[in-house]
Length: 608
Image (cartoon, rainbow, N blue to C red):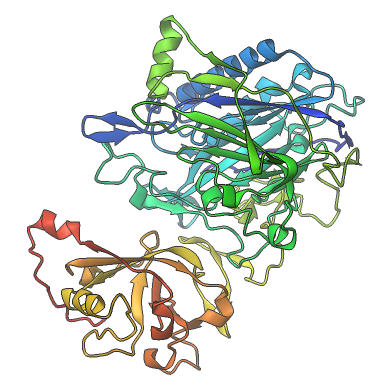
């Protein structure tokens, strides 16, 4: 069992961070194709396969995909060096270097957590020197996976065949800091008397992607090997499912999307988070319609800037670096500025120059093995002025981690805790201060976390007075296997489901399920139609009721609520007065065609 999962481990004395007062900014996009590659009529994740035959005593044996990671880190190093030599230094100018989503994912689809920590450590080595003091790096995204564990008599064992919790996150790192000693993270290299040289963690922020797209992972039918397929992915929900909620980071690793660096307020959305308006639907945006950030960053793999999702204030910038292309283009980058110019609210800024990264010999072959369409290119944009009055904390001197003697500073073996929204078990006593030991919303109204061996972390979540073993979602895609009779009735009623009768009942709830959760109605898989809805409700306590609640009087008596059950995780019984709030998309059940089943309706004994 891995001894710990700590994304950015720090130690030693916390020193004050003196913010730089920038007047200008330069944007650099490292555009490279990061999507899966074709392999015959299937797809594969590009990368160097894990080394399976190393000796256990090898010091790098715990880094499962070291060769792959080293190659990617090497490429990042060459890209940032090329950018630095091309641009040089400009006084009071911040350089933002951004890479696309999925830059770090490996040949298996996601890295193990030891590999994730290794990636971050190696990235730190690239940008700790003084020449990077005016550079801010958005290192694409890193995809990590966490295995299900089972507790035996004296140890915790991994269950490799189970579904995997997957974390897709962005590391935002300001350059120039002290490196921690690799053998002992509590020892610090560098000059502690220099207030500008502090630990990497004090100049870093982590943003976790909240919305998973269907193209984020290869579907089981299309994957060419036994690596991570979409059906095995358990995408970590955001900590607070209720909207609107704050997106302002309380601590720099809580996964939220609004943070401040050197007095400049940033908002970051990873790919689908942008089109889902993660920032635009935040409490900050609702409370301030004129814009909430100075710079909006969008690292992506299949996304463009959506004008109705922009949240920058006047004079602010929206910057997108995308790693997905088609037959004509491999990738793209876009920079907008918010300003009223010629009647248009946004002006597009063209790249000043594009520098292709080309290599020869062995390294060229390595690049072709880890990225489907070469080493990509740098898109360098002209120097821009920062918005006036861009910060309410401009020039402030503060530490991102203030010391608190009440914080837990040591985790004992077999004592599970939550770090950075991830479950952690240590096999020995490990110092964890100053990493957060709580979720991004402390003492949230959604309930506390607890641990159940063999099942991992759960949330104690209540609907009314009934405690649930799972937390319903309020914004997700749901599907239903439907009979031909249901479709015919729906067609006759012009798409209104309220009066559709199923098994002779027109008042009972209409049951849908979340395909990303555990529950799946096997009894209904042979029905010929699939109904899909974009499920979105405004409030869990008001809209949901548990079937075990003492006030539950049967499905027909709750037409304005959504019914959930403890033993059917991901199943939603939508009341008849609610169902027509959702547009139903109808498709033929393609799996029946594969099985040789005709479109003739097949009845099921179980009535759902």
